[in-house]
Length: 386
Image (cartoon, rainbow, N blue to C red; front, side):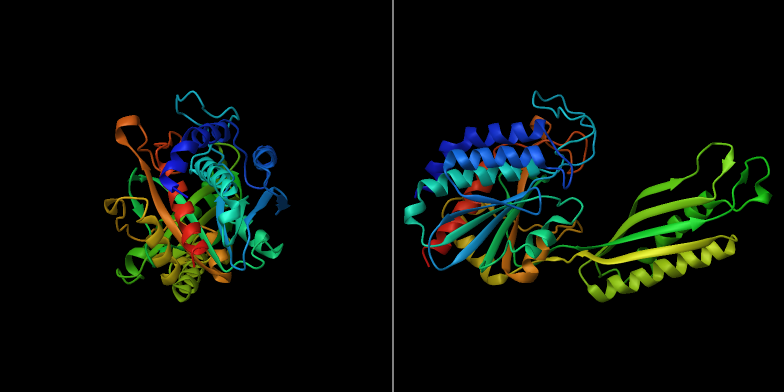
């Protein structure tokens, strides 16, 4: 198989599929039409598939004793898209702002090539189209329903626009952080805005808790350790002239160390409780450890993937990118089998593809699709040749 020639032949197909998925995004666990579109493409390729995790799909290609898996996530984000591209989202309030449209397009392109050479493959390749990565629930369901049965190794990738298109990071060891989820609920006493002394202001308490929690990273964590504590949601109150009796903070704690995650959880509870008590409020802290663990690349799988990748991509493609505090539920697969996860550059300032993942103007330099396909195919060939 000439991977470079084959990827050149599927380039337009991948771009077309990526743009189609981009126009019709669906939220986590609601990827029904996305799944139907993938099923149709697989049927056209005469590749057998089955439903998994309700809206996910597992397709199988090849033959042989060794079984490997490739994975693409399917879900979009609840974001109002603000790009002006002709393939802009047609689903108001939903957007593929994290590259999952590209991931699916790449895997479908790879499927097309692998099917063409199926008789020459000396391994079985499972293609996992996984739902619900954004709410970190999909991978666990895929595993629970037997999606990794027989699989020895797994390979995945993520497109990032803060990495220039043409660059790839494929390195052993910790790559993405574990994510732990925290919800803080403050209970106060409502009252009139003009008589604040008769109430306990839950909004004020929430504000002080939020500010003081930031000291966990700046003053209670060794600067050498990697910890990120971020709150993305604060809900409080009903009217401008009514002092709120309830506020809810929701956030995440990201680390590469389980012991540190436990410690941070205790510190959050201590700070929240102390501040609430000082203002006469009460507080409930719910801390969910390990929404998913850290992504830690296996040395052997990385070495194998790099051997294959360097046969089809120039040496200067491969760069070192520091580990990220972003999370990825691909890590659940790596708890079960050896695996590797690549960072693939998709950024290009010249064509307005420089907005970060989860931004309402996020877009990809679509040349990244070819690179992603080459990474998948070369990894499969290295396993097939063993």
